View: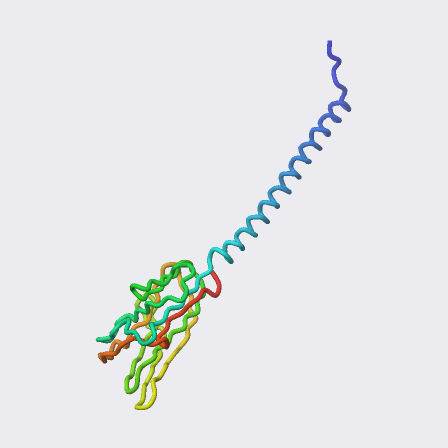
Length: 186
């Protein structure tokens, strides 16, 4: 026959079970904190490693890569120097933002003697900035510009010839370039 527990024995057993429960809770809380810290580190690592975006493209020196025959044509630069993140398409001349964030873009145009060309930077078919090169009788000329833009994922960026300029001009010099990089992901 079992002897009934006294109140103090019941209280002692309850306190012992409670201490065990508290230890388990503290261990779980520590594990949750550890997992949260690991998640923060992984998120930072993914932002630094997984979201690197840079590209740079130019025309091939001396070889005609495109002939501008009308205004508003996308300048397609085929010689890709780098394309980390895969955002630049050398077949279309369009950069598509793989992630949202702040981007820096640099673009330039080089023209032969006695030629003029304006190029415009566009985001989703909206004019943003322009550069102009005016070659004189003796020298070629390079015009350039830079813009820092907040883009959403899949925004499209390109450079186009001046919509009001119907001049025929070959794109063939290294001075024709289009580059960009992600400054900070959103």
